[in-house]
Image (cartoon, rainbow, N blue to C red):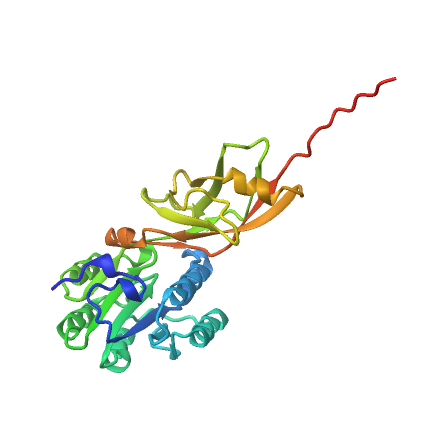
Length: 318
C-alpha cells in the first residue's frame, strides 16, 4: 500500500505506522557532490542549507534509543557515521556533518549508494526511515536508478523500511523518477524545498509602538517565492513577551503582538532589554503532504525592547 507523505521527515512520535516497541532508525543518504556547493557557478549553492537542515532534523529526534546513520556519497558512499540519538550521539553526528569537507570533482551516482543502503544499512528489528537528499540526476541516465527504486518497492515491506526521495533543486527533477516513485510501495517524493531565514534584529518601542504589530522579516535564502500556508511558532526565551504563538508567514513577514504588560514590567527600571526569539515551523506535516520541505535556518532573532525616557516639565516659582 502506498505510504502517505504525511509521514515525511516527521520526528519519531508522528509516524502513524510505527510500533512503540520498535527502535526507529533514521538513515540519511546525503549527496555531497560539488554541485551542492554551486560548482563553477552553474548550480545553486545549497550546501550550508542542507547541513543546517540535517542538524535541525537530528535535534528533533526525541527518543534516546533511536539510531541515526548519515552516509555522504558521490559516486559511492564515502563515510559511514552511526550514533544513538542521545545528547552525546547527536552532538557527535552534528559535529561530523559540520566538519565534513570534500573537494573531489565526480559524477553523481545515486543508484549504487541506494542499493548499498538496502543491503548494508537497513537493519532488521528496526523501523528504517531512509531519506535520499540530492540536488541532481543520476549521471549517465536513470536506468539503474529506476531499477533500484523498483527493487526497493519489492523488498521494503519485509524489511520494515520506508524511503523518501528529496529533490533539493529543480535540477534533480526527472519525470521518469517521479512517476516510478509514485507507483512504488513504501516510497514518497518531495519536489520543492524552501530555506527560510529570519532577520536577525528587530526593535519595538513600548511607548511609541504600543498596540502596533511587530513585523519580523523572513525570506527564502535562495530568493524563491514562498508558498502560502506556512505557519510558524514564535517563542521568547525566559519571558512570555509574545502574545500569539502560531502565525502565518505572509509577504515575507511574520506579524506578532507584544504583551504590553510584560514589556512594561521588563522595562520598569531600565530603558532597554534584549530578548531572544526562536522561530520554528508549525505545520511541516501539512506542507510535506503537498510535497514541500520548509526548513528554518536556526538563527536566533534578537528583539530589542526600548522605552522613551519620560519628559519632565519643571516649573519654578519666585
